[in-house]
View 1: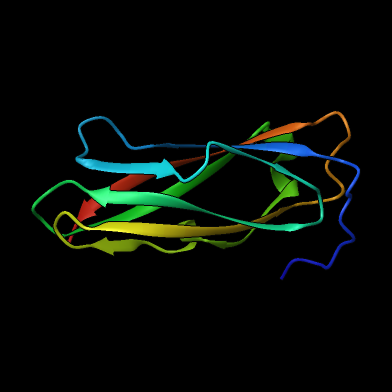
View 2: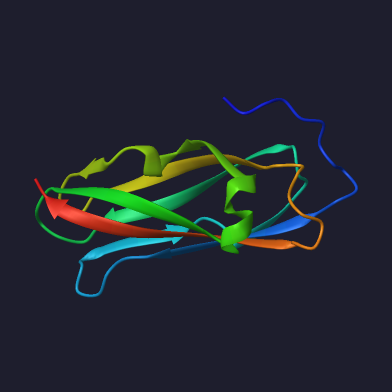
Length: 124
């Protein structure tokens, strides 16, 4: 559980969202928004849309990465679709939730974080 912090209303950090799937995989993953301007210490929520483009059931798992790497420990995912795998029926689309907070201890020289997900699939 993330510690309760007093938000830094005077500081804004840009969080960019990137999503990809390996080549040749009939699946899409895209962020609802490409970026958000956030205040460290404040909770935020966004969503990603994933769609199975095949006629078969699939299970998918997102693997996250935060850049710059040295700042990754300051990006706290409170609720994330990356914590578990998702099952998709043929041609099913799902909206996947991400709740996060940027730690107030984020070094002052870091003004942009990039959160990227690679979505891997495995047949059921």
